Length: 190
Length: 288
Image (cartoon, rainbow over all chains, first blue to last red; front, side, top):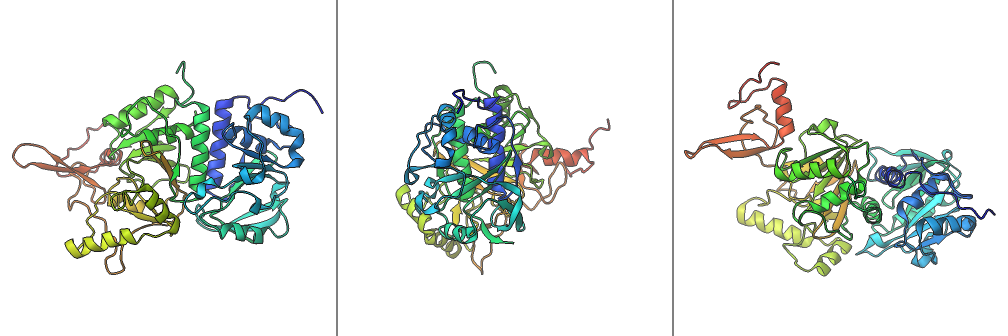
């Protein structure tokens, strides 16, 4: 392991803005894939996941880190200043495999916005199993291929969506691409 | 601008607002609290909308700001100048050229596109505020989707006046779940929110709330089967451009009862006049 930290965004203000706009558009139009630039990620993170962390995480957002991300812990701590916490206290999570959603806060009926957002790094958003998404933001069902989700993902998501307005939101990252699955969408295998 | 961050707000504030916006989009119509900052203009002048705009704006954006449909009123001019100065972004008055449109109390007549974002300035985000003053109670009502109180208000209006007596800020149901204030836009504009291709964001600075409607989302104005929602508009064509389908302002022109009805959307009106449409009080645009 190298002792040198790689830099964050080349242009912190502009790069964070364009990454946020990509996430916002992906959240508003679930499953739309955006490409990200401006950062070279520390292993094992992909560029998109690193960019999302730099754009949204700071000392105000308790973060849960997948043990598999340990190698990048120093980079995340230095660039975001986030407090690393247990899943039950997390506002955000950085995971390399889908964690147990039930372990994270899903908000309350009166304050559903207090639920966690999970940044999930997957193998690909261009190939893999095809899912059909439906819900607000989608004029017609969108087909999204995702490689790197557990086999029973549609059932897991159905439980999460069934909690609406409570529920977890997912930001999916692969390579330099990202998309989002807000709790409001329904997902079935296509 | 020297000494300030891009678009005035510091990046930590922007991150806080951005996280709120993402949650707001994920829960269409739900009001998300945020730490509203002091801005260089007072609450009531669009500070909520300005903070949302500042958090989403990038160097490549083209900004349009309207106040009651007009690009040339005080509020619109000062906010447009504020962002031209603090963010250096391009500004426009043409609806079609804008990527971000900040608005006070109107939706442009021209249909918005997928690649546009509209930001509403909101004075009172809580649609139930006039019926139930307690925030704790209204929060509970939203949590339980218990909107009986609003239906009673509409029913009482109909039994007393024969119609719903709300002409602006007409409450809507978003995605069949949340009762939402559309901000004080005329009820005339409500149907434009339904299945709009553009993302709609709402900011209330004094009340410290953000909410959103994703594109292609059902937005239904509250009504009853036997008293369906209807829009109201002055029964006149625009005096300047002759439009019969736009929302009109009534302008008093003299002390003898003179009236002029003109499009509230100034860009829509001037575009029509440039295309050769003339109303009864207008004149032919000089040929260039």
